[in-house]
Image 1 (tube, helix red, strand yellow):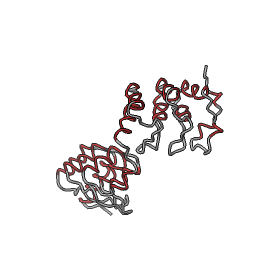
Image 2 (tube, helix red, strand yellow; image 1 turned 180 degrees about the vertical axis):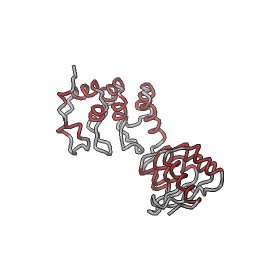
Image 3 (tube, one colour; image 1 turned 90 degrees about the vertical axis):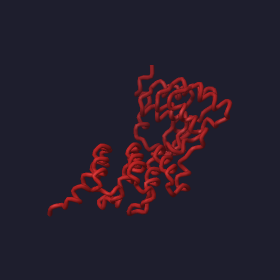
Image 4 (cartoon, one colour; image 1 turned 120 degrees about the horizontal axis):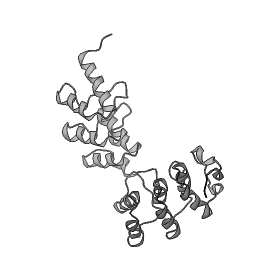
Length: 235
């Protein structure tokens, strides 16, 4: 059975959206042969905005909303609007954008949004701005174990461990008593995250600080941490 011309264009449109092919998406929308709010029947009636939001395609989300006036509060087959899908996938930059564009479900989104000063702390940790981190912890009294609601409830110690920022890790633990046993939403600790990202010096530091896996009360979801740490060449 052959597809109609409209069906063919819709298929092309959603293929471009899924691939984050902005040029093709805008080309198809500019012809006005495609409705920006058309729903994909084979994907729970999601629109392009749903798909772009849950996949973290920020530029595409912005173009769909600002340039082509995509409806921000349209629901898919499960009753989810794009903001909720972005929240569920921790696409916080998109969440904030959609809130600025008057998306509903602000209460739903609130549990994923940090206070401004906590965002500042995590922004500083992400780029290894040690002076800024110390300033926020010391002068602004931000809690060292504050959790990033938009990133699996991780702390800045876990961010530093993932990034391999050894000096920052040492400062957070040695000077600010960061909790080395804190677990993110997935169940990972900073030591486990450092191990998984092959930052052996940071793993060694945690062991030297007396870290013991058996002191954790929950099983970690990542099988890698069950590997004997002695297999690491920590010389």
